[in-house]
Image (cartoon, rainbow, N blue to C red):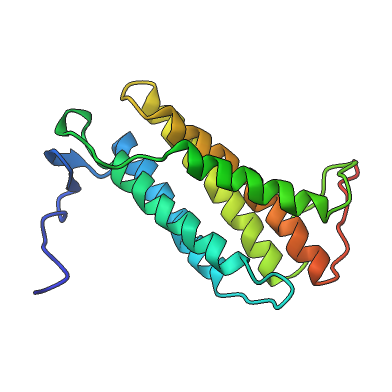
Length: 180
């Protein structure tokens, strides 16, 4: 079987429950941004630290949830989607954040993204997550999006922000405060 089908050569694609849709459609933008985020998450997962042994499994869990979200966004509502995010997945992210925050100094100012390559990649993923959130909420203006998806993506950007701070701390990088 060949990887290329040539079906998208004229700027159209298909989703679950619909055969032809423009590739620039808000739905495609939404799940495309989630797909891009998932790729960044894979890059983040490739970094290892003996001081952060649970991160790889957390990221793998997030990536699985991002596939579920992508599938849900790529499913036309009336086609009976079986893809959804549950409250437990959101609570897991909140628990990770709470654990991370016990290890960090409280924020007293905005901080500049950066530190080292790992924490910088996490900050890039956070920015892509925010874009995905904007695309998903834009899609939600005209097409139903399960509110738990929006909540999960919002919480994921918080998780990534705190994870970046934790990675910086573990790697002994100084956080640079924003001054204007």
